Image (cartoon, rainbow, N blue to C red; front, top):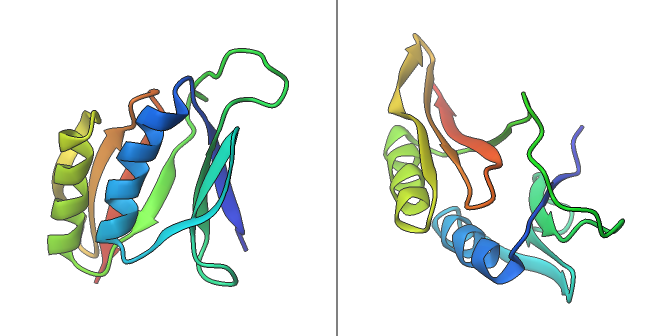
Length: 122
């Protein structure tokens, strides 16, 4: 149902480093890039993430209660994505762990404060 998610940034180059590292771990890369905007994912594939300077030229801000969830292929990949996020300027919002019987996730914020998680079900 979701085609992609767009998040605001105050520093596209810094954010690109963060998302390039996570995308690489997930086996994808940049699929679109212009001066103001970068999108990661696969055309006609699963939902991707885009990072942009706000088009209205107002400051980027974090949505309270907003979160982007990245589907990992294993618990080990959740752990790697979380570690990559921490190594690239991310902030901890909940270390990887079992959240319910069939849901394993790690929570973090990108360098702009946008909340994400990596999760595995199974």
